[in-house]
Image 1: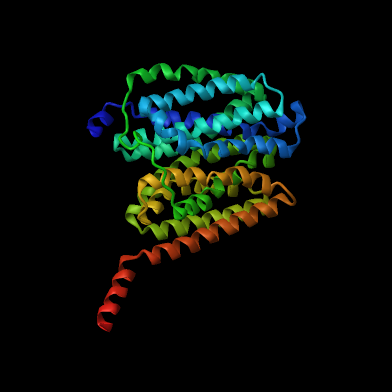
Image 2: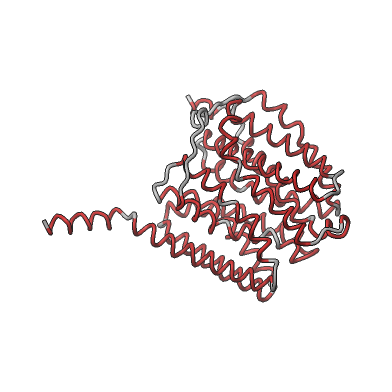
Amino acid sequence: MMTEEGKSLNKMLPIFVYSVATFFLMDFAFFINNIVNTLHFTYFESFILLGIPFIGRMITPFVYSPLAKIGVPRLALLSVSIMALISFGMAYEGLFIELFLSRFVIGIMFGVATSAAIEVSSFTKNRVVIGLTMGGWAIGWIIAAILFMFLKSWTLVSLVGVVFLPAFIFSKKHNIISPHVRKFHFDFSISVFIVFLLGFTPAYILEVVPTYLGSSSFVESIVAYSIAIVPYLVLPYLVNRFSITRIVYSTLFVILVSGILFFLTGNLIMIVIFTAFGLGMNSLLPIISGKLHIGPEKIGPSMNFSAISGFLLPLIITVGIEYLNIIVAILLSSVGMLIFIDLEFNRRSPKRNSGKKLKYNLMR
């Protein structure tokens, strides 16, 4: 039944939802300097506003199940409309507490929208659609960079977001209710939490890059995030040709080298490479979780709770010597991911377990 319904879906719907939701979440990364100059917030306050949606996202597991009863595609598009309405209202807000609450709710809606988008993409059973849906993070970032590059004002970009308000109108055509969300049940995996906490670090570091680069960030973002869509599609494909460990280790090596070189030298080619592979790593995280034999019902909540790093990391790395803090974060996350995966894969390896059983039988 789900397969037939999936065939009738517009395959662009999950890609559209994930991309637009990311735009509303991450457009603030380009606002920081503008916010400081116009509203006279401190950089620390501005980075709190940048990261607070990730705290809101942690609420997603508790609200997604009851909300999804209206139909997953409907919920995806409705979430976009709510985010568009909030964005429009933000253009008229000037107090820290107002923007704080608005960004917090956007975080909740982002979690709902992207969770629904991923589920809708899974209905299609189409790898390209699923890959491009995850690539919506890059597409949304590109939209934000282009709009701010031309409009040059956070209020204007916020106002323009209202064009996505009619999204809910099209939701009337879709009403697929997932059997996985009809009854709330909270599951959590510490292993998946660690995987996403470490794996998302490059993406969270990229939150501060527009402020770090200044005016050149617009071109860099458009080029780098456009290129990043390719690894989103290619890396999962390579996993089928080679082992997951080879692809993950190679990706981590490129992230580590390019990230350190960029923040030491300022070479823009390095940040393009870091962006492409740092975001491409995101497409490998669900595959890694699957290799750990963790059920899909635990992946979503664990992933959403790992978003705490999206709030804390920009605040921590901007205190003190910024580029050194970033290099340390890249080093620790890359090496930590490598060690964790090596330990977990070896611990869960069938060959290793069968070897233990054989040794036990011989001893008997």
